[in-house]
Amino acid sequence: MVTRFSSISTKNLSNALKTLTIDKSVVATSDYNEFHKMAKRFLLRNTLGSNAQRRHRHHRETMIENISSQFHVLLKEDPLRPVNFREIFESELYGLAMKQALGEDVQSIYVEELGTTLSRKEMYKILVIDMMAGIIEVDWRDFFPYLKWIPNKV
Image (cartoon, rainbow, N blue to C red):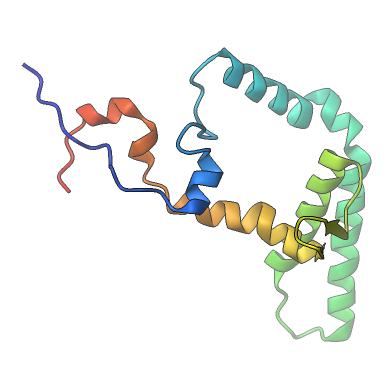
């Protein structure tokens, strides 16, 4: 006989996680049905496929030129100062993603519901940083029912 372990947590999710996961019904890495598999295939083909690579080549070249010019400016200002590569790459990769998704690198946007204008840094924080922070909080066993058969020593 198989022993069944209670590994699925019953704790309530925070509001952020409920929003991120649509109340535990969506997990970005799961392929539960044909729709998810098809959507993942289309997304990968339209961003990483050979036609997409050709279509977005000028965006990548612009990004490389921008990164190179920023490094040259920093080198001219103070050649001995350490360079924060992460800051430059984050900014340029976010711009590249915006160009590929929306067709332009949006610098700011007015949000009517909030009654304010969001800057590029605020959009980056909301769209990237907050999502990544929310994912870290997730107890992933909640999303995979087959894990209840795995012993949980906690």
